Structure formats: C-alpha cells, structure tokens
Image (cartoon, rainbow, N blue to C red; front, side, top):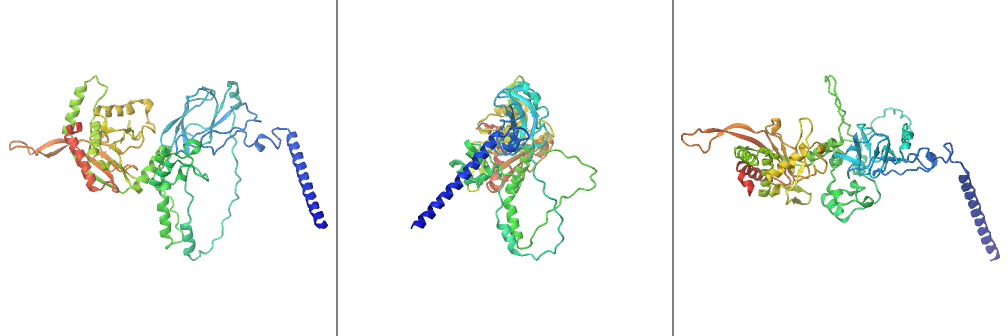
Length: 526
C-alpha cells in the first residue's frame, strides 16, 4: 500500500514538472515574438507571418477582399476584386473602364462594364474614394471572380504611391519534368478495372464546394422537381450564401454538365468492348492559306452552351405552313393611317405577327408550356422573346415582351422600339432578355424563305418567319369571267416543337390557328 502511494505521488510530481517546463518554453517564445522588430527582413514580416501584404483573396467570389494592412509599406488602400455579378458567374471580361487612374468616384458611380456569362453588367461603387491603380485592363481576357482588378484610396495624395504597384502572385512549386517511360507491352484487357472506373462517381462541377449546403425549403422543392443537384448552385445568392428559389429557377446547365450523363453512359457501354478510348485529335484544315482568331465573349459562350444543350436534349421536329398576308397588310395600312404621320408609333407587319402568335396560344395553350421532367407546366401568360438586331453581323438578342396577349399592337411596337432605338440600352440587359414562354424569330429581312430554329430550353416551341414575297396562287373566289390565278403576298412560317410536350397534331393545330389569325386579322380583337 505504501509503495503504491509513493509511486502515484512520483507520477504526479513528474507530470507537474513537465507542464511547468512547457509553460516556461511558451513564455520564452512569446517574449521573443514581442521583442522581434517588425521590418521587411524580419521573419515576422507582413508577407511571411500575416500573409500577403496586398490582402488578395483570389478565391473570394464576392470581391470583398480582406486587407492585412497593419504593417504594409503602402498608404491605406483597398485591393478590389472582381465581384460575382450574376448567380452563375465564374469569370468575367472587362469591356470598358468608366473611371481612370487618379479619378474620384462616389457611391453609385460605374467603375467598369463587365461581360458576364449572360450579359454586360455595370460594376457600381458602394462608397466614395479615388481609383489609384487599374490592375486588369479592358479587353484583357477572362478575370476570375475575386481576382484583383483595381486599387482604391481615400486620399488623393496617396495615388502616386501605387504608380508601379504590382500584385504579388502566389508562385506554385514547379513539378519536375517527367521522364518518358519506356514502352511496355499492352496488358490483356480485363473488365474489372473498367467496371470500377465506370461506376466511380466523378466530382460534379459546381460553383462551390462547401461541405454542407444551406438551401431554403422552396429551393429544395424546385430542385427536386427539376432534377437539379443543389451542389451545382453553391454558394447561393441569399443571406450567408444560402441557396434560394431564384438560384434554382435561373440555373442553366453548362455544356459540360449536360454532357456528363451521356458521357457516363458511353463509358459504361464501352466497358464490354474496349479498355480505353483514344482521344480524337483536333483536325487541321489544310490549304486554308491563313486564318484569323476572334475572342469569344462570356455571353456568346453561355449562349453556345445553352443551344448545344437544347439541341442534344430536346427531341426537335419542325412544321411549316404558307400564310397569306394580304389582309394583314391592309390592316397595317389602315392602323398607320389612323395613327397619323405625327405619331411616334408605326405598326409593322412583325408587330401584327407577334400579336397573332399570342392569339394562337389562346386557342392551343399546350404550346405555351415547359417540360419539367415530372410534369408539363402550362403558363397562363404569354411572354414572348423576340429576336432583334440593329445591323447585320451585330448579333441577335431576344428581349422579352411580357403578357403579349394583354397588349395592343401599338404597345408591342412601342416596347420593341424602346429597346432597339435607344443607344444607352443597347445591347439589352440580362433583365430585358429574361426567359419567356415562347420565341419568335423573323428572318425575312435577310431574304430567308424558311428556317428550322433551335428551341431554347425550357421553352417547347419557337416560331421562325420567312420573307414576304409575291406568289401566284389559285383564285378560289373567281367567277366565270375572272382570272383563275391571282398574285398574293405570302410567307412561310415554321414552328419548332419539343415532341415531349407538343406532338404533330398539337403543332398543326397551333399553326392552323396562327394562319387563321393572320389571314383574318379582325379575330385579333377577340
């Protein structure tokens, strides 16, 4: 008993001695830290101890870059990163700077115009200051969200200190050059590794990689209905990066994500026949005699990805019909005469055709719908995207006309004129080009007789209008003394349909209703 008690006492004494030694060691280290001078050559300099002097957080998507300025050799300043100006924005291109170096700005002023993945958006100032240094030049290519684009100061006298300022880049260790391996005989193909590779889930591309997702109940419900993985939407635009319902509604799958499922299926089916599929090399066109490369904007890339996904996922088919324009041309002439020459509104044939397409939706509402995987959603309001362009080669945009069924022809004409003719609103903003329920593309101005347009998801129909031309047609109402043929102004209308929602019979009914409204335009008043 006595020996056991002595041994326990010795162990406690030994533990107290070790703890005392550790405490004294930490106290000495703390005193050494406090006594070390904070100079540029010190081991506790701002760059080595507190992190990057510039405070650049390249992974900060919101552009709110924390600044470690306690021991910076520069005057008080702020390194401003490129913010995420849309929910899906990963990178952006600065199209134009509205502020120059040394120029003051106030809250609400526009720093620059940024081409995002959907449209050109203004980057506005939130407070007052002076632009000391521009780090990302206009037209300099893609800039990632959070990457520094400029430096701002509060005192004009501090601008000169940043004349030669350069953002310190994080240098990654250069990997050693890989030595070419000696060729080895190709082993006999075994199905086991292929099956493992096919069944291993790949990391899904997304806007964030948080361990836990925060989403509202409505966002979770909509994502479940549309089959969208919420991890692709993180971080969200709600408070504390919470995913909200608008994030799910506005999400557009990229071409890479759209091709992920077919690619996985292809790997699974190929597992039984081959071990590895060689990558198809880029084919070089010979004899071209030179070429020119043009940069692609973020909006053009997004549109290309959207159309590629639609063409791959939507089972397209097209129906065409010839429409006589004699009656609608007479109505247009009467309406413009009633408006008078002094009126700022001039009715066009395109305005009447847009109105006729909205009227046809009342007759066949199934075409005014959207495929939702589990259900077909039919909309009550007809919201039409109209493809417009100011000049050939300038690109086409699709501004949205809301509730066209409740608008008059003059209202349609005024809405389109406001978008096309105002210089300060061209190109249209992302809000102006929001997704509608139907799209009308008029290619008649280019002399195109007919077209087979691509449906833009989640819409299920798109109407393409050809050029109006004089044709010789049978004169059905001719008497014995009348000519059996007559000349009429006609065009060809082509309806692109998503066969999952609109089959051939429904598409034919819609075109028949559209033809009736065009050839009997008084029905547009009903």
